[in-house]
Length: 259
Image 1 (cartoon, rainbow, N blue to C red):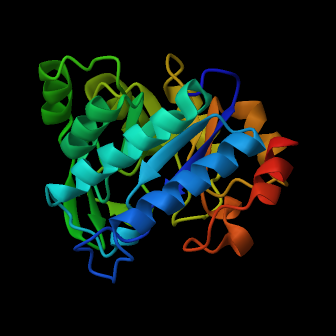
Image 2 (spheres, rainbow, N blue to C red):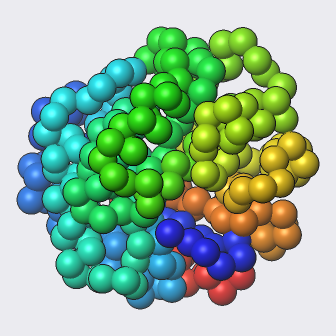
């Protein structure tokens, strides 16, 4: 996972897996696209990525079907086999299946998982999603996978908090009561620009662990992001024409890295 100052993490937005609500091109095609996008990241100069089942929308608000983490772990293993240490991995199983993400991460050697709702609760398009920090941390210990870091969102996108709305208080609870290793501050929607004032507020509230920007990063705002964040997840903008179903653009990746 990224360790240098404000390292960039790309996203392998998977096409619909088999049994997804939308038509899947088949697992072989999903795997081929993921490997092609991973190659673009490596060639373009990004050394970290998150594998995410974005194509499975609309998502389940609870646990996913067993084939999802199984297939994601196969994809992760294939990425590691092809690119080795050139591309470190994270796993995000949408909408909020942290335990399946941990299982897949342990199977394929990923370094972190992203958890959208780690503490508290949020009203989402899947209904009310409640954090399961106690289950996630216990399961990580049972797996002997304490090396897998938990990157947790603070006031996650596509959601409204059910209860506490003060970002600094949520950041403190996510880090210190929930045990998250990394905090992610994001925009209100996929690709939405992150309010950098909120990033500063999270930094003021929690100074003892990394703060990442979770969405909306572009070449134009990356210099400002670099000044205050330890990392940045870049997904939407790296696709051709910012279309999530399109392949990643090597030209865009190189342009972003140059900034």
